[in-house]
Every structure is written in C-alpha cells, then in structure tokens.
Image (cartoon, rainbow over all chains, first blue to last red; front, side, top):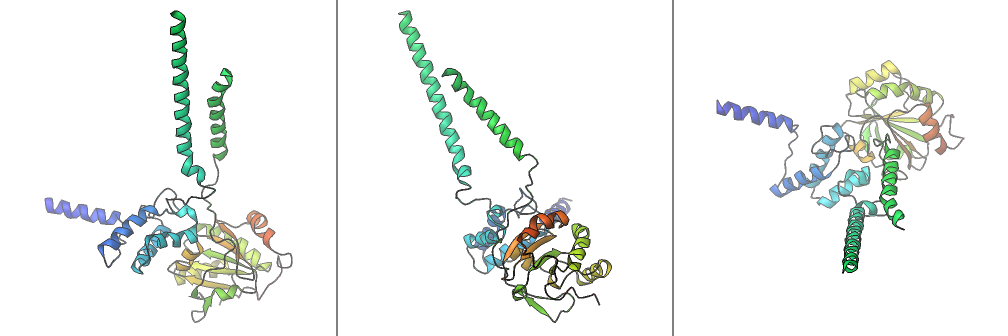
Length: 137
Length: 187
C-alpha cells in the first residue's frame, strides 16, 4: 500500500515537472541548469521563470539553456545569449545602467531619507524637551 | 516652515498615487525588442511548399519585406490572415515563418485561407524564432533591403497597426507597389 502511494506520488511529481529532463555530463552542469532556469524570465508568461512556466517558449528556452550548457558555455554566456534576443527583461538580475539606476539605488536612498527624518524628528523633540526642562527650572 | 515640512509626505503620496494611476492599464505584455536595427539572424531552413529549397538570411537582401511568424495552431493568426491577403494584393512582400507547425496542417491553413507569402520558411523546432526573440505567434517584423529589422510587432497586424507602426518606416515607392514577384498561387 505504501509502495503504491510512493509510486503514485513519484508519477505525479514527474508529470508536474513537464517531463523535459535533459542529460548533462556532470552533476555540476545540472546544478547550473537548475539555477539558470530560475533566473531566466519567461517572456510570454510574465512573472514566472522559465523553470516555472509551461508555455511553449519557456520549454524552448529550457531546451536551449541545456544545449548551451552542454556546449560548454558559462552561465554568463547563457544569460547573454537570451539577453541579446529578448532584452534585459529576460533576466531577473537587471544590469546596472541609466534606466535601472533608480531600481538599484532607490530603496537605499529612501531608507537614508527615512533615517535622516527620524534623526531630525528625535533631535528636535529632545531639544524641545530640554528647552521645556530649562524653562521649568 | 513647519507647515511646509508636513506637506512633504502629502506631496509624496500624491506624486506616487499619480505615478501608479498613470501606469494602470499600461500594456506590459509588449516587450521592447532587442533586435531593432539589428540584421536578421542567420538561418538555413527549408521552404514549406518546396522542401528542396533552403532559405537563408540572404533572401532579405535587396527587398523591403515583412516577416510574419505564424502557425495553424495560433488563433490570432486566423484573425490577421485576411489583412495579410489584402497587403499581399497591394504588392507588399511578405515572408512567412511557419512556426512549430505540422506540414499538413500548415498547408491546409493556406489552402483554406489563401497564401499571402512570397516564401515560407519552416521553423519546426523554433530555433530561428528564438534567435528572433519571438515569444508567441503571431509576430511581424519589417526588414529593409539591407536585411536590417526596423519594426517588430507582437500580436495581430491590422489596418491601424499597419498605418501607425509599419507605414512610417516604408519609403513611398515601396508602399502599395509590387517589389519582387507577387505571392505564388497554391498548388
């Protein structure tokens, strides 16, 4: 009974993976493949990685990713291959340039502004309290 | 002075709200193409109707052409097909890419609806489409006589899209005039 259940679960999980299992020469290459398909973004079904998506184009891109890795391409070269065809959009790690500088530094700038704001407010409150204390003296 | 400090978050709030409101309903499906002003990627693929003929990127030299990626499995392709028939009749040179399709189904599609294409490149595996940055069908490109991609349009091409996106790039001598031989009739 338990054996049957395990077999059933294995079949279901294999079906969920979409059956495209690629052969790699080394375990390291397979690791890189698994990492890359989570970092490449599916252009058709936005907000899914090509590893998550069932779209035709995601399947093609997984196939190409496996092919390129087997050809000995580095991770950078694989991402560059897709970027040349689909633009920066395809990578979940956008490059830093004039159009993305706000994305990269915006949060830090807002955080700094917040810190300054808090410091300013606290210091002013303290000073006022001191002033009040002096007045009561 | 004090009043103006309390205005800052209010102004920021309205600025953010305005920005987000302006972005509502914006088309996020259409991606900028990485291939604009780039040459057509290299390929060597057979013709749909004559498998002994192999087409390469050289077919785009010396002609203004549309490159239309289509498949008989693609619903929007049926929608835009009559417009391509009309364009072909007006003398616009259209090269088809039959994308991830079966030969018999593709042929039936053309038999039923007509063939607006001068040549049809068969891309069964989708490798050429990957090089073009295609992420679905239909997609249509405008290619100049130097083989450079000027326009990329994802989705249906209709009169409005043609006038707004494609026509401005075409020299008046090419628009609505026959470039090379018109589309070959279906056997």
